[in-house]
Length: 111
Image (cartoon, rainbow, N blue to C red; front, side, top):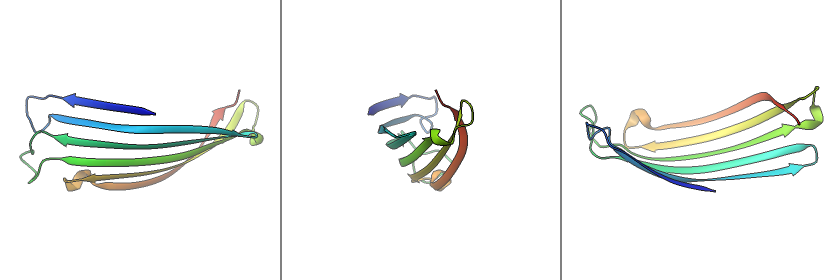
């Protein structure tokens, strides 16, 4: 579990911001596989709006991921890794408002 806060002051108050959030990480060994889960939330607010946008930037970001290292399919010291990720950023500024879903395949060193 992690909780954090951050403050950044810039010359232009449109770029000055405060943010904070939390995340949780959990793993479990299941036979010859390792499952890893992660969820997080963060909130960001700028001090004032930028000239280009009608409102100041306020965001809520949610993210989750689930990964598995499958040591039963090992080739030498390498084991396959499979991960899926989901992310949602709700923002008052349209260019920063997005949804993302991704999948990753890779290898990990099994030791």
